[in-house]
Image (cartoon, one colour):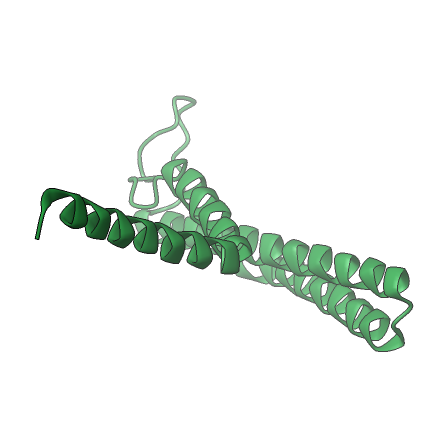
Amino acid sequence: MNKKTIITKAEGKRSSLKKKVYDFLKKNNMKIICFAVMALMVYIQLTGYSVFADPGKSSGGGTTTASGADGLWNTISTLIQTWVTRLGGVVMFVGGVMFGLGWKSDDAEQKSRGVSTLIAGAIVVAVAQIAGQFFK
């Protein structure tokens, strides 16, 4: 074998790998984008919370906050309420998009699924808000 055939084979392997990666990204682009956005949202949300902070210290005005266990429970319940509400909002958004695309293509089944998804998201938001009142 000479140098030229070895270089040609190596370039063929590189272009084959590039094609496979390109095809994978082209096929799964929405999944990758959605995963990246959700990972970014989780990262941003979690970096803002101090779940294990000691809330039993005085708050400067002479009054003390709830005990450590109660403060932790309040923090966790607030976190759950916030994220379930956001999840319901995302479901409502997806339902609205599905409903709009159903009108675009004049597909009655897609319109029906869109409205059902929209209502399901609204129910999740409502339950999260009501449950938040009971947890506090």
